[in-house]
Image 1 (cartoon, chains in turn red, blue):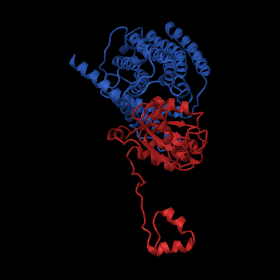
Image 2 (cartoon, chains in turn purple, brown):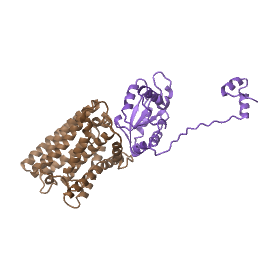
Image 3 (cartoon, chains in turn brown, cyan):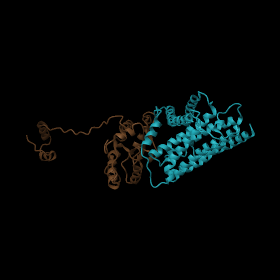
Image 4 (spheres, helix red, strand yellow):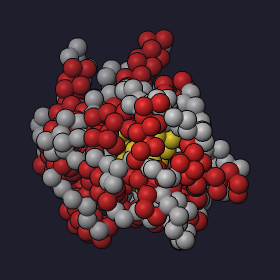
Length: 196
Length: 296
């Protein structure tokens, strides 16, 4: 979950009931089928009070799929603005999380973060709290997990810590042997002088 | 006098709680019939509480009617419940109150349709035109059916219409059957939920409402459903006894189970089919009204 802190009020408000609006921004329909699957008898999202609504004006959360194609952009903006605040966004699939295989293609904006940048630049709209569900397509269980995460039922499974391992001298000499004659390249790459 | 006031408050408190809970029960039954676990029974109540806590928003520059329509609808429904005995027998009563109830029911549909036309949303306008066509047919049928009971009992007083007492007459039995079908139709249940049509026109008449406004609109629709069920039950269950609240609660639950089961096995039709069905039913009911006037 990133972008805009999840306020306690919002958690309380959506604890018992969450109505979602499915916004397809040019997806291949893989994620859309998986979204529909969470309302099927086996996962049955309705038992958690989740309801798929047809009108963006009724929704509390947007289930966002697709890499935001240029063709869909004006409609996506309208639908996005039509959802009343306070809203949540659940970005489903690799495409909406970061553009997927189309991240630098000419005809797409490239994922929901680029869309937020566009909204900020063009309309001054702050990004709402967003939950990312990567996968191509993600499993219905993952989507259900995201929906429950949005409402404070489960803990987040992602840790934002970076682990840096110090290279030992043995390791460095091994590397040097492997890349014999390319010391200069290696030194440039890792930014330290290699000493025997 | 004070007891009448307390009784009316108890009645209104009960219906405000019962309408969402019954909808939750229906959702649960529909889920069971589809092999799902389904939402908890107070789910609709949670939904409405959530909607009422959200701020209502407006798009564009809608008219005054659009802004006040859900509140007028809600007020109409609550006032209509003052005349109909629900949990307790205490209620407002004067000669001609059946006409007032009929007016309140009819006006609320028209208010909702008018309010949604003023938004300019194409889906809302489609929903409104459907709402008006269906409500013209439905309210005509309601009027004819209530007229049957008025003609049988020769009274415009609601308390004298309820319940149907022996000796049973053919016209009142037929009127009861028609009214049971009408409760299903006017409760915006599946083949007849064409004005709302969630998957097709995305909410139709209520598409532009959000937050608090939407909460009141949905609450009013649920109250309208309960109002029709209450009128039907009052025709059947004995009144003015100690057990009448129990009869009422059991009856409402039985009708919820029955109607949600029927709803689960039916699909959506085009509006022409609904209208032609109601036209035929209205003609048949008109014949029953003639029978009632003739004294059968």
